[in-house]
Image 1 (cartoon, helix red, strand yellow):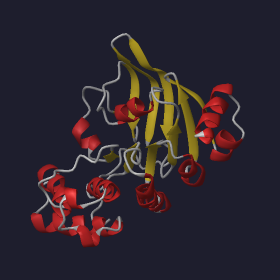
Image 2 (image 1 turned 90 degrees about the vertical axis):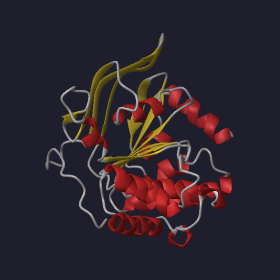
Image 3 (image 1 turned 30 degrees about the vertical axis):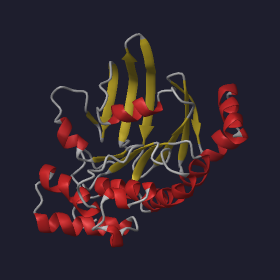
Image 4 (image 1 turned 180 degrees about the vertical axis):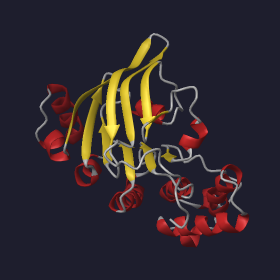
Length: 258
């Protein structure tokens, strides 16, 4: 990236970029997260898998306080973002998030979708924002689509614009919440290719996905969640090829039988 990312709270790379301790989250009487302990190391790619309703997306959304935990700690580079004294917006600027839905402004071109947050949030000049936007559209393979509107783009292209928009903010960590699940099967590959490229470049990533092949080939660590708890975690070959828990084995059988 051309612009330096914000200074971390600590230069000690042994301190996890994301550290979650005793995290609980309820929606009414439904306890979605039941005392989660979780971490993502510096430049690590952690893929979270599990059945629908297991709490994966809620966990991801707690990392930048899109959901407020009921108890526990969420530390980003050692800073507890649940602490009332923490400048949450400053921490959020270090976190990029890509959702299942693209959430692009339909009346703006791809270029303008990637520049608007830079200008409004980071107060970059129009010239600087456009330069960074074009760099990131090129990074996701869409340099030639800068002038097109979302409805002129495929779903996969729209998702890559959303990734470029997140990258243009200079994040230290990228969160992906089922980024390919809304796409037609033939469009998934291009988005996963961009995510693989980010991982190869050393981006710290937390990825919620059903793409087992991506988890196997790209993740440093796979975490399997079910019923609001972390059931099993480890190297992809361990969790995916030699799972130790019956619940993990059951899930993987169902995935492979589809």
